[in-house]
Length: 281
Ligand SMILES: [Zn+2]
Image (cartoon, rainbow, N blue to C red; front, top):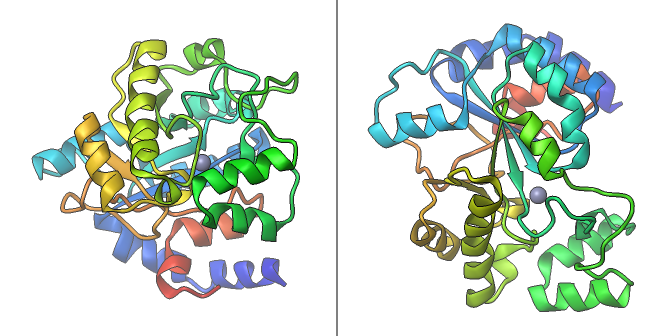
């Protein structure tokens, strides 16, 4: 059913209308997580034909200067959250389609055998609950289920420093906090530490400036924006749907989420932003 809806939407002409009229003079930012190389091949083959990829840095410079400068029409920034180990397999596709991506890493998980808590086996209801409760309750509940954030595993989930070195300069590595808590559920000190420490630790590990943070799960409040500014970040990325322009608040950048779909029609519809604007589903 969902497949038919996306096929109908794709051929309705709405994605073309959105792209040529609304996205034309905006900057669209996509968020992926853990797609496979075949999905990446299909997705970037399409996107590279219909959009003009720019880097997050180019977008930030344009916003800071309030000058579109060399920003092309139908500009698109591609981001990946979490730093999943399989992101490394996408390197040939990124090179082939010249996609300058930004990957947001958790400084406490990258280059270790530690696991992402949200990838633990659990039903959707439990995951939703964990995302809503105070951070200390989330940690205790996960511990009661046998998940310990510091435990090292053989099946590695996060990128290693060697893989990251190979991916540079195709991928810019930026911050996704230390341990991926829901920042808005954290106490002041925890939130500040997650934001500040991840920048310091990643700069030390990668020897590159860290100037962007993607709020885990897209959750942030004014407090997180203030902490990010104090820490010296230049921008913050949300998962609030919509488009960006040089007038955008750099700490509330919007992203479109194709939901790591393998369905090209769904990718086309979601990348055009119609779903988020019409709130169809
Ligand atoms: Zn994340």
